Length: 510
Image (cartoon, rainbow, N blue to C red; front, side, top):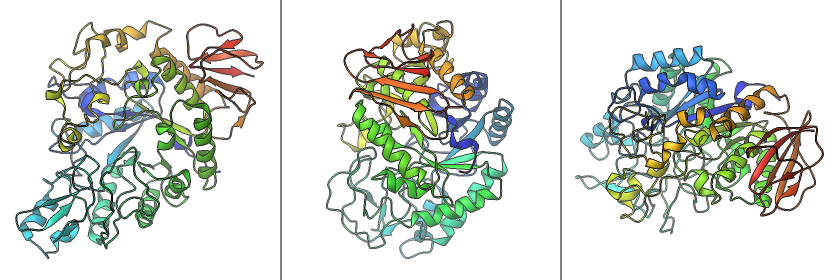
C-alpha cells in the first residue's frame, strides 16, 4: 500500500460565494476566506477544496468558466489567490481547486470564436456542434441542445450557457494540461475534477430514448453515450503523469457519478486519479443494511486498485444531510462519527459543522440555480444548501458580510452561529472539533481496514485496529453497548452509559 497525505485526509469544501465576505458586497470572496483560515485550522481539517474561483457570468454559480487562468473580480485577484495559498500553507492547510473540463461558459473566448467562425471551421471543432440535435436531455432540465443563428446546434449537458467541449480534439487536451500547469506552478495542492465522468461522448451521438436526466439519481450508465465512457481514463492518465512532475503530494479527486463501486474504482487505478467521491454512500438512506452493503462494496472495489475510499455526506449539489436523513440533527451527528471512523478520507461541506439544515423556504424570487428556470419552476434546485454561513450575531447577515447576502439567511440560525456554538461543549461545532482531533491522534483511524462485529440488524458495529470500536444505532430503540474500556466520543451529549440511544453513535476504546 502506497502512502500519501490524501489517503486519510479530511478536506473541507469551501463554497466560496457563501463562506465569508471580506469586501461587504454580500458575496463571499478570497479576503473573507483568508480571514477565516484560523477557524479552519482550529477545526482540524487537513485541506480545503475551493469551488470555482474563475471569471464567470455565474449562470451556474461559477461552473460556467470564462477564463481558466484568472480569478473572478468578485472574489479577488490572482495576487489574492497567491496570498491565500501561502497563508493556508502556513496554517498547515493544503488547497485543492476546482477544474471544470466538461464545458466552458458561452462567454469564453473559445466559444465566441467558434460562433464567429461558422459551420465547418476549426474553431467549432473545439465544441460539439451538429446540424441536427438528438434526444439528449440537460441535467438541469430541458433539451441538451441549443440552436445558433446559422442553424447549427451545440451540445450542453448542463445549462445552455455551458457548451460542452470536444475532448476528442487534441488541442482541447493540450490546453487543459497547460491550465493544470498554470495553477500547479502557483502552488495549488490538487484539483477536484467537475463532471469527471462526462468528458467523452460517443461520436455517433445516438438517441438515448429517455425523457429525463439527473445528476444525483441518474439513469443506467453502464453503456451510456455520454456518461462514464472508457475514453475518459486516457485523459486522466495524462493528468496524473503531469502532476508527478510536481511531486507525489499533488492530488486529484474525481466527481464521477457512476453505476457501481467497481466503475468508480476505474478512475482511481494507480496510474489515474488519486481519489473519487463516494456518492453511493452519500445517496444511501439511513438504513443499517444498505449502509453496510455500500461500505463493504466500496472498500472492496477500491482496495482492489490500492485506492482509499473518500466518504462524503453533503456538498453544494445535494440536500444537506441534516434534512436528507429525515431525522434531524441527531442522525447527522451520528452519521459524522460513522463517516470519520471508516477507512480512508472524508470531505466535509461548509456549515455541516454547525448542524445547518437545508433552507427549504427561500422565496422564489431569490432562486438562482439554473434548474429552477430550466425545469419550468418545478424543481427548486440547489440554492437551499448554498445559503451563506452564519458566523456571529443575533440577526442576518450573522457576520457573513457587512452588506446583504446574495441569498437570505433564516432568522433561526442565530442559535447556530459559530459564535453561539463556540462556548457550548455540547454543540455540533465542538463535536466536529473533538472528532477530528481524536481521529488525527488515534492510530486506529484513517487508512486501513475494518472488521464488522455481531450486532442487531439495525446497528452498525465495527472495529478499527488498534483498539477502537464504532457503534451506530439506526433503529428505534436503545441497544446495549459492547464491552469497552472507555468512551472516546459520543454523538449525543453526556455519557451513554451501557446503552446507545436511537439515531446516535459512539467511539469506544476497546
